[in-house]
Amino acid sequence: MLDAILSGIKLFFDTLGATIMLPIIIIVLALILGAKFGRAFRAGVTVGIAFIGINLVIGLMWTSLSDVGQALVTNLGINRTVYDVGWPSAAAIAFGTDVGLAVIPIALLVNLVLLLTRLTKTLNIDVWNFWHFAFIGSLVAVVTNSLVYGLIAAALAAAFALFLADWTAKAVQSFYGLPGISIPHLTTAPGVPFAILVNWIFEKIPALRDLKADPDTIRKRWGIFGEPVILGLIIGLILGVLAFAFNVPAGQSGLVTISKILGVGMNLAAVMLLLPRMVAILMEGLIPVSEAARDFMQRRASGREIYIGLDSAILIGHPAAISTALVLVPIAILLSIILPGNQVILFADLAIIPFVVALFAPLMKGNIVRMIVAGTLELAVGFYFATSMSTIFTQAAVNAGFAMPEGAVEITSIGDGFLWPAWLFTNMTDWLGGAIGLLILAVLIAVVFYFYLRNSQAWERIAGAPVEETE
Image (tube, rainbow, N blue to C red; front, side, top):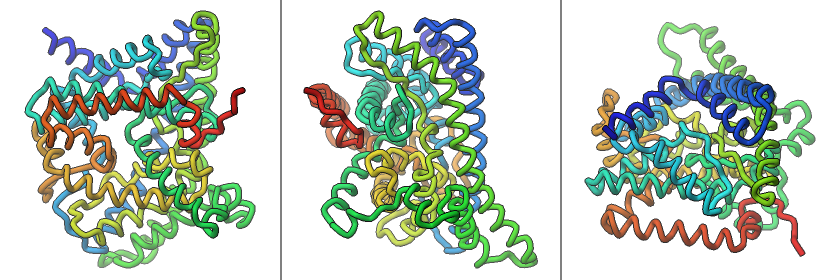
């Protein structure tokens, strides 16, 4: 009976999809918070339209970067045993397991409990990215051979994502101009520690500390060549040349090669222009919800602040995030060649790099040079996480009935396979045993919640928020 209910919930969300369900959630949420029906309805439709636009632009970027990545891999003759199958495959694997069936009600319950106990300010409506919690839970279920331990791990991952969202919320709101928004997205927030480390190193070296490389500075120094659209065009042309100019298939005309190169340049220029426009539309839809939430909390909870948790797709349109990610594409390919012991070959997930680096920007004030260094470090470490977890990742895929790509011995994705939360959860439960490992993880999460709540402003400063001093 329970399995049927959980399967029905999953089928309901999967069938309607994000662009239908998200407007419904926004409308219902706005009405609950006291917004008038017309204002709530318009807000929901606008948010849905914005996410359709964002997904279309991301799809354009995905196609271009996937083509570039595969061409670079072919040109360089890279051969590895672990294939990157991309985050959509990882999400399908996560939702296809027994943990995935239960993750939506579990994550919503965790969020509700933490909200009611005032341990979090984030209301996470990014239901489709609950797959990250299911993915971690599925890996834990594999290493412990226990569905119960997998479900507990998914619940802890959902709680941890809320902490990361609260911790980085002020930085996100200030830098990106997104009032009332937080990002409980486990592809993005785990990069913050890498940004903190790299930023600290840069601040200790005078020559690097004074280097200004944010989009505004670049635009002022380079003129038209520093504008985001032209910068996207230039980076796209360089990537196109690297991918398509040095290994032209027999019989292919030079005009076709030139067309491919120019196509990458124009596509990435379009991404640089269109993504910020789509995010502006999204914010137009979210403003009524944010205002209704503020008024609701002022009336009923002494002005308590509540954040709306959303997908980090709303961040990646910033020129610093996109420019950094595009530069990191060939760097990621190079790392896959030169890192000793790495067994991962990148294919499908190169376009997810903007999500990985988006939260570097608030801490680093959009400094693209610093962001590239931090991104290189995170990816380099990620190759080893992915290599070490590939067997478990592959077993979870087999359990979910995933069809392995031809020639792949094992599989992974940048989306979660490269990131430290999945590695930490999996190895803690593998090395220490399910019960002890999960207990230690629960204690660690409780500790970070405790210290954050005791002095949230200090933590927010570390994450890059401009915190006002209180008397």
